Length: 60
Image (cartoon, rainbow, N blue to C red; front, side, top):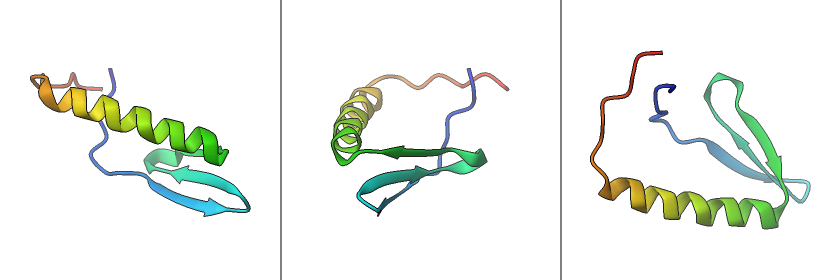
């Protein structure tokens, strides 16, 4: 398992699409609908993860 990212990605709207840029070259382009659903799913997963005990991530 890779070390969890601690810095949020940067989302932007461009030419009718949503882009998400992150560290280490992460880049994705989505339709507005796909971006909205991804956002909902990320929030739901984040809420569940916040309730779980944190384990020390393994080294890369």
